[in-house]
Length: 304
Image (cartoon, rainbow, N blue to C red; front, side):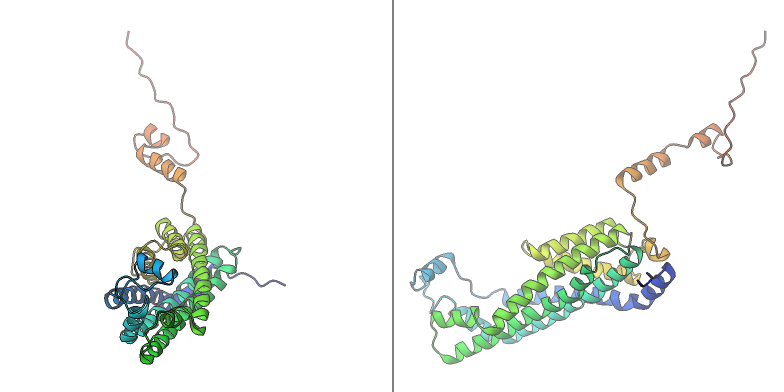
């Protein structure tokens, strides 16, 4: 026998108990991810770059033309010198990524209470995606730091050695696999939950569409846009859930789906609001009781 879906009262009671935790997690996730990005750009953005010419020469088995000791030697030395920065960035990023799960999980539960048919794939993606997306890059960062340290301490600055240190290794491969899978699941959770939360009226059209865009940008990054959009969405939705932002949409108060009006419905509302109703115009500004038709205006008889 299937379990009964929670009613509006039960849903509102659960949401009231979980609102603070979920909202605070969303705000913290947005802030931490943004801080980690700023710190990484400030501390690690000035690292050595591999030019196209040197990359082609390396493929052909020729030494770099820029006088480097090896194609990735300077990069390995730079990473070894910034071990603390790399680990700090990875840890803060992982923590911020993990905090995505409570907010998405809360939105899923609130949406499902108003739309019972919502696929459970969304909640699995919301919980497992951030976990893998946090663990993968953290494992990769640890592997890179350890390999770079071993490479530099060995004192043999060869190009093959640098390749082995920065592009291969057990943890690097595992970390890359976990990161890719977590990235895909997290993006899926963003899209499914944002779209359905908007449809039941929990998120405004702006936040719903922005959440979908953030999910797409997780998979198809364009410059530095993805992290900015994601951080803004997480922090803003967290504030909305906490009740510290704009007024909550009606669906949060009723416990039922309150779909947003379509563009055609909005136009009809504006038209009704801009012109007086027939009843009002016929009675000089006061509406008639419901069901009563206005009487035709009486004509004055002309005097003969």
